[in-house]
Length: 135
Image 1: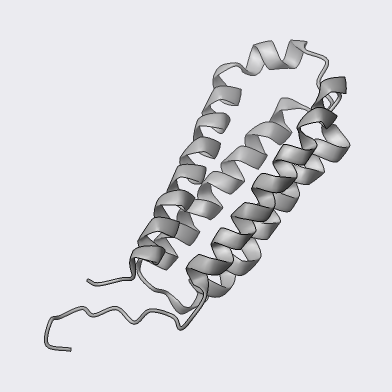
Image 2: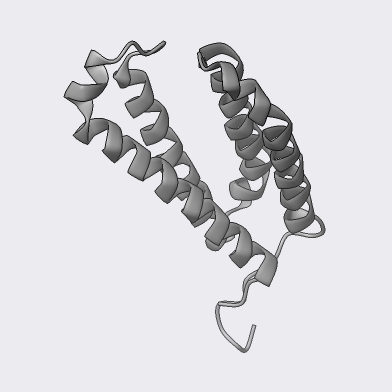
């Protein structure tokens, strides 16, 4: 199969984000008793479900882009800003630390760059995969 390098690059990024969230969910599960003793703004179940959901959603999105499914490109334009927005919801509503506001400008810059990269990688015509060399 031939696919554009930009799609391969985006799939690698999405799989990396999926793995990051999967490890976050595993970490919450392993440290469940400890997290229940902490004065968190949300229960550990929220953290487990959040990380588990995004791990699965981003892995499915990466697989859809890899196999050039028609829904995957449209879903990427929806899912990635939703993922970044969910991160901002957590930052703005759930964060208790006073020093957290100091990181907001850097987080905003990184998120804007992420959206620009997404747009650049998905710009142009959708790729048509060649399954056989004679096609």
